[in-house]
Structures are given as structure tokens and as C-alpha cells.
Image (tube, rainbow, N blue to C red; front, side, top):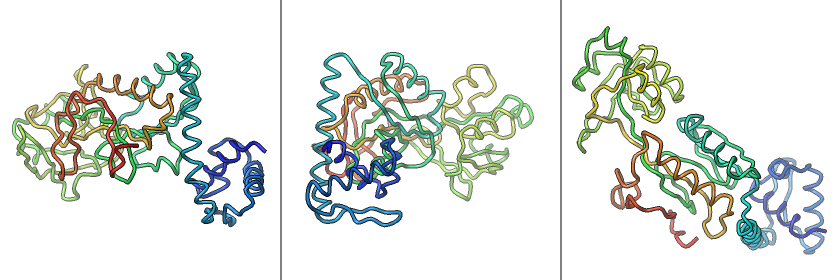
Amino acid sequence: MGLAPALRVFVRTVERGSISAAARDLSVSQPAVSKHLRNLESHVGARLLERSARLARPTPTGQTLYEGARDGLATIEAALEGVRRDMGAVEGHLRVHAPTCIDGKQLHPIVLAFQQRHPGVTVDLALEDRVVDLVYENFDLALRLGRPDGAGLIVRPIGVTRRILVAAPDLLARTGPIETPERLMEVPVVVPISTAPDSTLALSRAGTDIAVPVRSVLRSNNPDVLVRTLVSAHAVGPVQQLLISQELSDGRLVCILPEYEARSSEVYFTFLSVRFMRSLVRAFTDFSVAALRQVEGIGAVGSTSVGPGTGRLRVPETTDWTVAFAGVAGD
């Protein structure tokens, strides 16, 4: 029996809570996973998992083995990748999750450029507007907007996304210029679906926040829908600047009320460990952070950070180190 493969299968089964899910993650058959588990139980002379038709959970003995094997396997993987890195090789399989607002226009070209530099890397790039469980869903890292929560998460600050107010010239030709926030109450507005149900638009000017009641004709959680609605001159609205750089450049959209901004969001990479981080993950993170900070519409890390107790992370603008939440700074 290969002990390392059997332990890897066991650890993944515990983390996923399912033999079939572990098989999918490891790209092996379900019978192969079951065989590894049987051999491992025979090797240690104890039952490690309680199984049902759909679920698998560790016994007390299995939990003890899992806690020891997980860090041990991570150390082995890190050591192997360190050797490959020292030999000039960054290779392997990388799973990345990101929100749709930072998608084909920003992150996809970065992934392609990284693969051109490191041809031995394969990437799963999942784009969804939801928070993922990195362990359960087997992602190496996730790009998130807003302060991540959850025990044990490690984060690396990237920057702050700017959200500006824009309109199509054809719409302004119909409505006339919009020179005060109060004018927003007189025109159709498209807003993210996360906006308050009473359609109150939160704006900021020179550090002062105001709330403007608006007539939202459309709310959506899809950034493409928001941009298409704006470009079609159907409504005005707030949008992340990084989504519309081309539309602003070619004049299909223009900035209105430029002294005001809608609520911005911090951008982070999140992952589970620094100590056991694979060299591939570290290399991709370093490469991507540098590239994302060049994207128009992503401001400096320190531009909106505030002190403790406010739900945001205080990080100096020049910081380029990893920060831990939930008391795991040494990980």
C-alpha cells in the first residue's frame, strides 16, 4: 500500500465529508478511493470513518489521524514544490475562485500571462458571486471583495475598488445634465441588487457620507447586466470603474458627479495557510497582486483602511505581506 496516497485520499474524504466528492477532487474513481480507505484502516488497525450512502465522517481515531496527517502532507507538498522552485520549475494544478466583477477583463488575462511564464501550470478559474469554503470546495485561493470573515482565514490585501456614477451621453441628452445628487431622484437608476430595498443610494464626498433616495428601475447582481443597462442609456447608476474602462475611454459612458463615489470595497486574496503554502500558490499570488494593482479602478490598499473595531483591516499602503484573521497570525 502506498501510505502517502492513502493518507491524501483519507484527508480529502474527511474535508469533503463524502467519498464521491473526494474522488472527484482527486480525479480518481470512487472504488479507488474506497480501496485506499480500506487499506489505510487495515494498516492502522482501526476504523477511521463512519460511512453512509452519502456521507463520511471521521471516528475519534480518524479525527486524530486527520489532524496529524493534514499538516504532514502539507509539509511534504511544500517541500517538494520548494525543490521544484529551486530548480526553476513552477508547475502543478491551481484552483482559483473570484467574483464575476473581476473576471475576463482583469483576472483572465493575468492567468494567461502567468501560464505563458510557467507552461507547466494548469488552472481552474471559477467565477461566481458567492463566498466559497476553501477547504470543502478544494480551492487554493479566492479573490474576495470586502473583509473576509471566518476562523483561520489568511488574507493578502490587494487594493480598493472605486465605484463611480456614470451615464450614457444619449440619456443625458434626454434628461439634461446631472450636477447635484438631488437630480438623481429625477432620473431612472440601475443599482446592484445589494442596494437597500428602499433604493437609497449611499454616496461619499471628501469623507462625508450622504444617502440619496433614487428611483431604481432595475437591480441586478450581474455586472454585465449593470454595464449593458448603463451603455444602452436606459438608466444612470454606480458601477465599479474597473468594469467600464473601455466604455469610458470610447465615450459610451461618461462620469457624472465626479466628486462623489459610491461605496468602495477592499480586495483581498484569501487562503488557508502561509506556513504550508505551495510555491505555485505563492508565485501566482505575487504575480497577480502586482498585476491587479495596475488595473485602473483599483486604488492603493491604504486609501480606505481604518482602525480596529470598524470591520475593516488597517494596513499601511506599502504593506505587501500576508495578514491573518481570527488569531492565526503565526500560520
